[in-house]
Image (cartoon, rainbow, N blue to C red; front, top):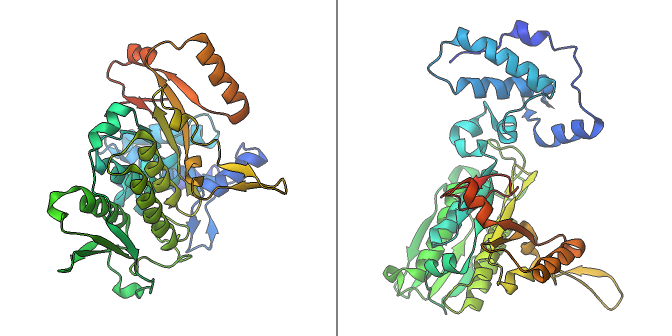
Length: 380
């Protein structure tokens, strides 16, 4: 499809000032204005709006171009004057290579019930393309994930970056006769997700029962600071994903072969901690948990503590728990004392939030959870 909006129409807005406050303008340039390498500058608001409208209207492949033009012009004018908007994600990636290669990047939010090992990989991929993820870890959910083998040693190969021309995009596995499996992590979103999938397969599948040691090789991961051409921004390097696997292995060791909801939450948060999209976007998660789950309820209590000098310090071992907003999923009306206790916690800690499962089901019977904002009921 050709361009819906003509240059003549766009020129009418050349001298118009976007109706933004200083803060709004800052947020726009920080979050939605894409870098234009051929012009050595960031987009102007007129250009961003045009890009988003062209993409949005262009999704209709059945209506003739001329019939779409009037709608496109009205949409452009509304967005320019902040009367209407497309999805914030589309405002960032619409009509770019990102939208073509990763259509999911247009979605603001997603939701998962964590009841299978593969769900962690799906959460990982969603977060890497910039989609916020709500996840549910009720006891009956996590129980379905299944047991895993313990005692499998984890090792990290010393990092020697491969030349850009020789990097492998996809992840592979090599297993030697001594039961040592080397996961060679590919330099792509799919490669990172597959590395996580392979790791979980190694400790859960009967096929890999002979594996006693897993070695991670990150040499194909691009170095920190290298520019990301498709998504924009810079690469986080291998240290973040290396840290992710180390921390997940510690969580699994604590689980002793069987996950509890707190472990599933930790893994989801650790994955989120690793994800940085486009150099400016970080993870958006919400964790829905059972009213009787004291482990998750108190999971953030000790993230910050005071040392002997009275200084506040962060506990790096559990710092990843900041990644999600945690909310109780009430299936029954709580007692007044219980509700007061939660409200007191909210006054001091800001959490937990809480959701009325019954009311949610009345509105949408097949609802399973919510997006990270808690505004959309989601299905599976």
